[in-house]
Amino acid sequence: FELCSVFVALLDKSEQGNEFTAQLKLADLAATGQRFGAPDLPSQPMNLSSDLQWQGKSLKFDIHDGALADIRIRMKGEVPDIQHPLAMTSLIDLSLPSARMAEFLWPESELPDLPFAAKGEFVTSGTSTRLKDFTIQLGQNQASLNVDWKLGKDHIGSVAQVHVKGEN
Image 1 (cartoon, rainbow, N blue to C red):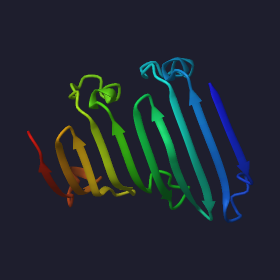
Image 2: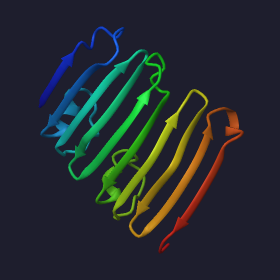
Image 3: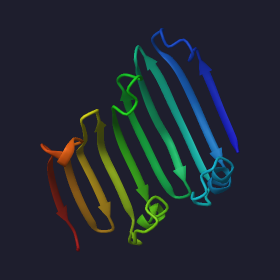
Image 4: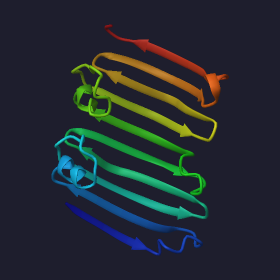
């Protein structure tokens, strides 16, 4: 596999505007996964190009070319405090020619053989996960979501607005 990267003062995070650009190209994700103890990955080529920028304690990211075979992903967002990397805001744009291509994530599921796309804002914090102006398309069916999922016991205070239209 090929891993190319350019570092521009990345190690000194105290200065504003430090940048990191990376490109990852794998001829076969499954073969690479085997080498690193991840045996259940699909046997497909993978490309990933991204830009990262440090700004104080925050990290901005832009995955502008993410591809696994025909799966395409673009993410752009920010981790406000790198000491808490699971708290982030991100715009996501994901497309798959068939939802079945994601079955390796949920092996026991029976995902339909229909085109799939998801797009919108994804926000996580220590207390909730939010989907804002999120659209999911499965074949001719579409769902629009605004969700605030509370992470506490019983998910008390969670709110969801879902609008669905389509064939089924």
